[in-house]
Amino acid sequence: MILELAVVLGVLAGLFTCAAILNLLGGALWIRLRPENLPWFFGGAIVCLMFSLLSFLTELLVAGRSMLVQIRKRP
Image 1 (cartoon, rainbow, N blue to C red):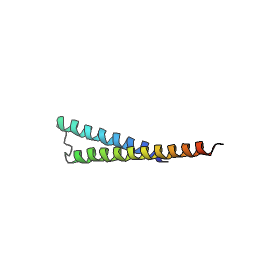
Image 2: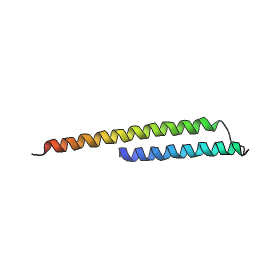
Image 3: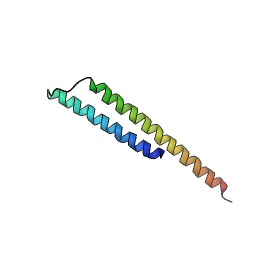
C-alpha cells in the first residue's frame, strides 16, 4: 500500500508540473491565466514529489527489514 501511495504522489507531482508549465506557456502566449497559480502548481509538485520519495523510502525499509527477518528464520 505504501508503494501505491508513492506512485500516486509521483503522478500528482508530474501533473502539477505540467499544469505549471501550461500556465507559463499561457502567459507567454498572452492567454489570460492567473499568474498566482504558478507558485501553487510548483509548490504542489515539490510537496507531492517529497512525499512520494518518502513513501518509496518507507516501502524499501519495510521490505528490506522483512527480507532480513525471513533470512534469519531459516534453519
